[in-house]
Length: 301
Ligand code: PAF
Image 1: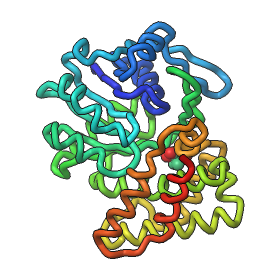
Image 2: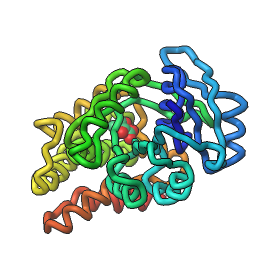
Image 3: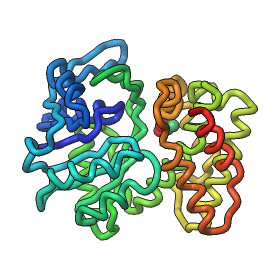
């Protein structure tokens, strides 16, 4: 397959590398020409299990050079989704499938406003990936990736795509209810992201320390109540246990929100906790914990 990954962040670089190793023709599309040149020259570096692999990929800032793409993977931060649309439109043909692998809500809808919804898929991934430098990531562990079609009648296409992706990212499956997939990840991110960013703790420590664990619990319960009122069937039975399990299974991971705060970068809090607050507001459900979290994260910078 000819695949373009938009966004050379932690997930974009990881997926570009894994898909290249699985035999696909992969191109990374970056908004910064200088970084694209660096990655094209040096290759991607993936550190895993104490070893570093160098993987050659094409990287460019010019979408015009990337015609006839089979699959486009969008891996930019949620607040950058809108700015990828012109590149997306320059790349798509009638056969191109588009998969957003991003945090938060609203990304897939922004894409589907421009691309035929039958070709649009959303996914979430639990790979542990940390960006160490340009084109350089630490792959802390394989995690499951779940994708779904925007239109339930195209679940079959999502299953076909999952088979292709699973050669690169082993535990990839398709779920028939994409909303359930996105909300299940949203709740995890809305709890671990801001609380790790506020505490400065790695995910595992967050679950161990009783004060932070109590806050994780309140945030998970509050978000799950919104999902329940929207009749979203989460992929787990107990949201609090699900959040704690992710903390433990990614114990050494520095969450992406904490990484953003440490680098002085904008966080995805608006697409994550902001989405929960907006959905709760529309339903008249109070979400004081998430409102406090968003205020505190904004206050950090
Ligand atoms: O954003 C992240 O870092 C991850 O999605 C998660 C699940 C919070 C684990 O670190």
